[in-house]
Length: 220
Image (tube, rainbow, N blue to C red; front, side, top):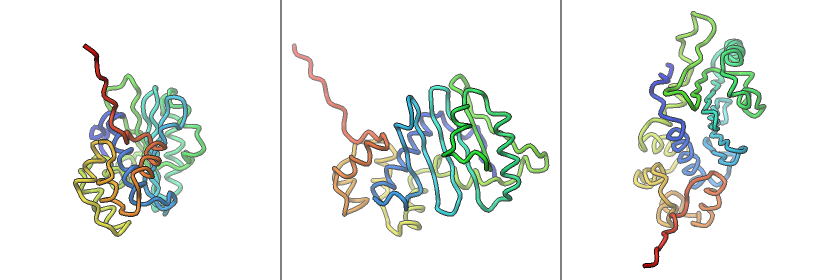
């Protein structure tokens, strides 16, 4: 199936959910190489990148900048030749504002199964369709791999229960989904072996707002 671009929220909302997924993975699984989700809030000047890698070759990259946001994914089991044709189409049709995205080696732009973009001036996301008419409506894997960005906390619970073989409390997942400050109770509920300081260190890399904002007291 294909994910309808109209179902994607604005880039900030989408990025916040990707950040929450990365924060949850970082707490549950301190070993970076075993996580599906990661987030780099300091990718570049005014640039952030969210990543999903499942270890089997499937991945997606979400790049957010002042120009807007671009999202590409690759599904290993789909025909490689079609992914190459799609990659050429993406290079041809992606607006010039996303040159940094298109030419970033880390994003493996030579192989694309699905791609969406939203310029800062756009009111909605656009999807780049496969150049071959017969494949323009094919099942490209986008709905399967992007749905967790749109689904409720129970979707992450199902993923974590299966992959990490744990049962993270839904209330703690919802706490992170809300980008609420980290607490020792929430961290321990997700990983009894992790300290609050360790979780905050991971949050600093991700860009997650781990600490409550300081209150300003005005003198009378």
